[in-house]
Length: 127
Image (cartoon, rainbow, N blue to C red; front, side):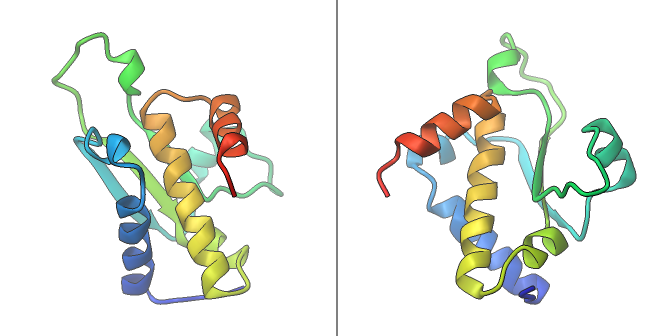
């Protein structure tokens, strides 16, 4: 397990968002990006997570593809869970990589992509 303070964690998140392709960042509007230590029991229940499953991030909101022109919506929320990300990492570089992938994954949900589409895009990107 690798651990850093809250400020450093948030700086890595900001760098991950800044490194996203511009077409994703420029349309990322009315989205709160927050950090929590762990998912709540309600979040775990909603996702039907087993006790042995972990969660690095969570998108909550109405994906752009489902809005049908609606503009007066509550802000969407992307939560990154600090402790699970740290517990799965053995170094700062590994933590940065996990945070970056998690940010991308949750932003992709904001754009309406499902897991199979996200994983397909990840596989098609050059290493």
